[in-house]
Length: 62
Image (tube, rainbow, N blue to C red; front, side, top):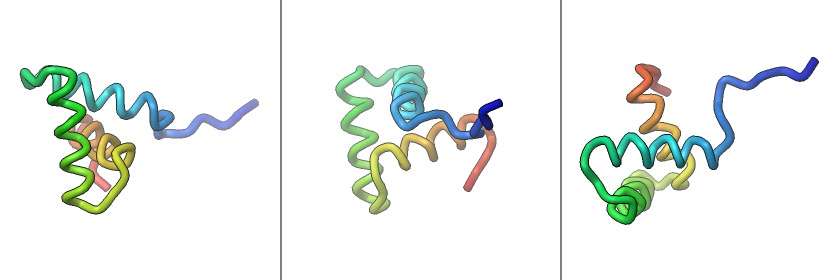
């Protein structure tokens, strides 16, 4: 039986982060720009930044 990972694939995480940002009232293009900007400010990839956004909303940090 395959082992399940706790972290969804990067494409799913980015999609989830986009949904989170859209729920805050951002358009799709604004949400994408926000993710890119946050990632650049923190020196991480967009996928990692998206994972941090999703983790924060989910109540998990780290």
